[in-house]
Length: 326
Image (cartoon, rainbow, N blue to C red; front, side, top):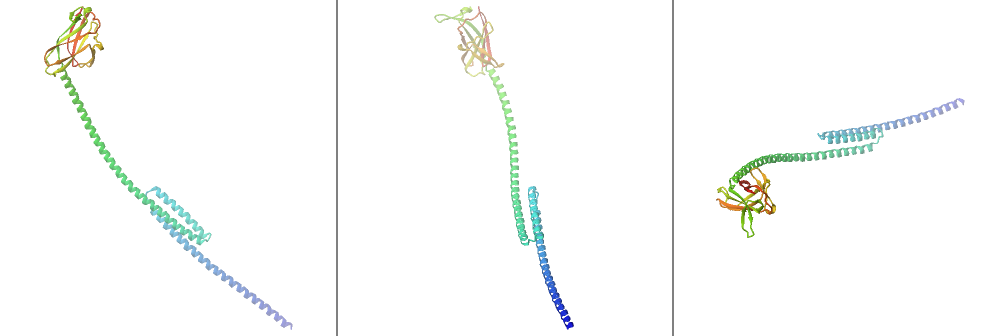
C-alpha cells in the first residue's frame, strides 16, 4: 500500500515536471520567435535606412556637381555657389541625423525631397544669374564698342579741330601780316597823300569899328591872328575836302588853345604823339595850288614875342612859319 502511494507521488511529480518543461519550452520557443521577428524587422529598417542614405548621397553629389559646373570666372557668382553648397551640406547632415539617430524615415524622406527642391531652386537661380550675366556682358561689349567708336570719332574730331585750328591760326597770321602790310601801305599812301603847304604866313590883325581889318605888329593892338598858306599840287591825294590843323605856339612855348574857340587834339602819325591845335580849317582841294587862311581869335591879349605856327594835314606836319609881335 505504501509502495503504491509512493509510486503515485512520483508519477505526479513527473507529470508536473513535464508540464513545467513543456511550458518552459513553449515560452522559449515564443520568445525566440519574437526575437527572430524583431531581428527581421530591424534588418528591414536598416536596409531601408541604407537605401535612403544612398539616395541622399546620390542627390547630394549630383547637386554638388551641378553647382560646381556652374562656376565661372565671376567671383561674386562663385561665392554664392559656395554658400549654397554649404547650405545643402547642412541640410544633408540634418537628414543623416534623422536617419541614424532618430530613425524618422518618413521625415527624412520629406527632407530629401526638400533637399532636391532646394537644389533645383539653387541651380535655377544660378542659371538665371548666369543668363543675366551673359546679357550684361553682351551689353557691356556693345557699350564698349560704342565707347570705342565714340572715342575714335572724338579723336577724329579732335584731329579735325586741330587741323582747323592750325589752318585758322595760319589764316589769322596771314591776315595779320596782310593787315600789317596794308597798314604800312596805307601809311605810305597816307604820307604820300599829305598835302604840303608853302608860304606859311601869320599876321596880327586889329578889327576896326567898321569891320575893316588892319595888320598890326604891336601885340597890344592885335585882336586875332590870321594864318595863310599855299597848298602844293599832290596827284596822289584825292580831290575833295581837306582838313588843315593850325597850331599857334606863343612866346612861352605853349600852344594857344581854347576849346570853345575850336581848339582840339590831333595825333601825330609820325610818332603817335598827341598834339593840341588852335584851329582847323576845311578846304575844297582840287589837286592844285590854292591859298587858304585860318583865323584865330581867342578873345584874350596876345603877349609880345615870337609866335611859331605849324600846319598839319592827315596827321603829319605839312608846313610851318612864324611871326613876331612887338
